[in-house]
Image (tube, rainbow, N blue to C red):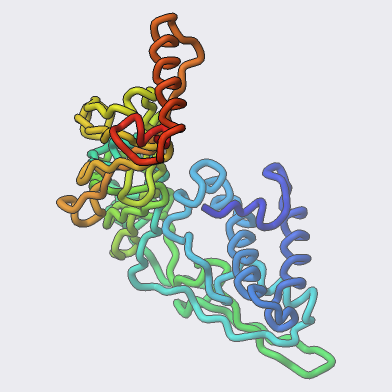
Length: 371
């Protein structure tokens, strides 16, 4: 979500004059007729949108309280003619030169803004999917005026300033000649209509902020950065326009023992040196719970043992699952009992005596100690 104060480089307590000066300075710097650097035009539009909101006391108050969600569907980047204060820019910088034609705002249905929700889920929830209940604050059509913005018994009327055209013209004389500047009507803000008796519930916007509870179905196999689209749960549209969408961006908590690489789950498997030499069947932790894992005799440190089909389901195809791979970590004892030491010394002596014979491999311990 855009931070209009940051875009203009002013604090949230900035007064109208400070906001206007910041806008003029940045607009001169990034105007596309002057600045040909990549991205300058987009930056110019962002600056214009920020000034359009912060220079209007009513829009500024709603933005301070609700953020972009309180602006009534106007969160998209405006056209060149949509920018509040554009006439000021031409007067102070271009002195009338380059007065571009500025079209009126669209008077038909306007689609509502898309919204973003960041949601963090557990490791196992990402693997198997989950249904989450979330609280969402967005704009819905005003239930009092049914979206018209007018008090009951009244309605929009043709703007007296522009005669319904949505724009006004002004001729300006400059050293280069006379130019006609076309700008959005300041009375109706380019819509061509005004509301003399606005709805008390939505202050004439036709929209009102509402907090609702949503149940979001998260499919198996998602990961951090996965984006889910929930249709028509963004802000409501204006004048009969369709609602925007809600985009849910997922983050996944780390697991204390398990890691993930795509559809493969990775973990370490500590074994005693006797388990590695003799082999064993042990229980291991997986996302499905406890599972039996066979340790082959003579397993080497760093070996990888795989449990097939115990990994992460493939997103969009939960029947296809990856594997769980265990990396062997052989743990050597730091202390030995007397009996253990005696047995190992006997084995070491046996190994030493066999070193005097022609080398050949025979048996597990001979293979282990190179006999």
